[in-house]
Amino acid sequence: MLHDTYATWDPGAKSKRPFVNVSSRFGGIPEMIFIAKNEDNIPTWKLVIDKSKTVTRRLKPMQIGKEFAVCPGRGKHAVCRAVVTDCVLSRVHYHAREIDLVDYKHLEAKMEGFKSWDGLMSWFIKHKVNFEDTFRIEFKVIKSK
Image 1 (tube, helix red, strand yellow):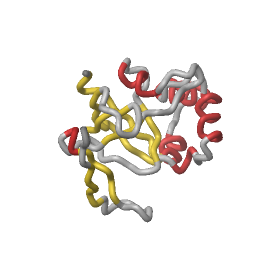
Image 2 (cartoon, rainbow, N blue to C red):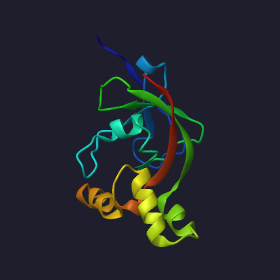
Image 3 (cartoon, rainbow, N blue to C red):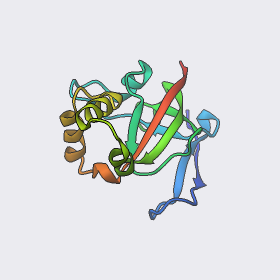
């Protein structure tokens, strides 16, 4: 069965592709792909379902209050829905904390679904993504299948 996908204009985008894909199979709700795996080789979409992953980092921001479909891969059906509760540039969030840096790193790694800060940073290095240039998107699951 084919599902049509259309693009909506994202006026805040600074990239060459200022469109966000929205699939009609989710009633026009944006999809967020969770295909990565943590140090234990557990797919992040499974961590989202069991609520042990509540933060993700992306190259584009998302509006607070925006609902999205959690998908285990491109073209895959959603496994649940979530809503954005916070979105801030990672370097701003990181430098604005007034807590112990060790505690911060441990908590952030855990919220990302990793056991350690080193595991999280290894993922960013492996994928050649600058951690400080990402947006920290906090979310909560609102509907499980």
